[in-house]
Length: 148
Image 1 (cartoon, rainbow, N blue to C red):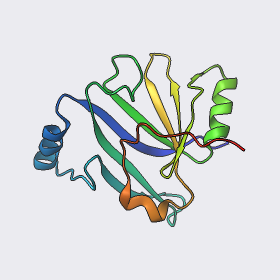
Image 2 (tube, one colour):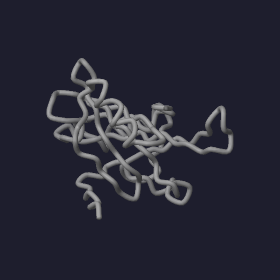
Image 3 (spheres, helix red, strand yellow):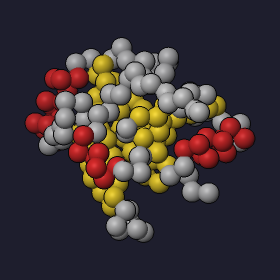
Image 4 (tube, one colour):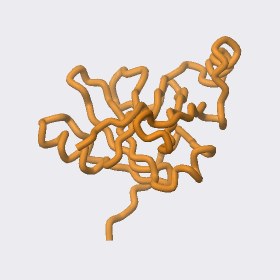
C-alpha cells in the first residue's frame, strides 16, 4: 500500500498572519491565491499527467488546529486512500485522532508522531482539478458527513 504521495501543505502559526504574509510576499515572493493560502502546483514525477499541489498557510497563534500542545507548525501529507492509511497506522500502534473530516477540499485525518507533533493526512477530492484554484486552508470548523 502506498502511503504518503507528497507534501500537501505547510501550516505555520503566526502572531500577526497578515503582516507575516506581507513579509513572505515582499522578501520571498510567496503570493496568496486567496486570503488564507498560497498554493504551489506541481505534477507527479512518475505520473506526469497527475496534478498535485502544496498549500502554504499561516494560522493565528491561538489556533487549536495543530492540536492542544505548543506546536507552532504542522505538515500536511497527501495520501491516496486516507481510511486505509489510518487503519494501517492504528494497527501499527500510531496515535490516530478518531476524527476524520470530509469537505469539498477532501478528507482529513490526523496522527501524532513519537515527539508529540500533530500531522495532518489529506486525501484530495476526486474532482480536485475543478477546485484547485479555490483552496481555502483554514477550513475550521468543518462538518463531518454522516454515514448512511
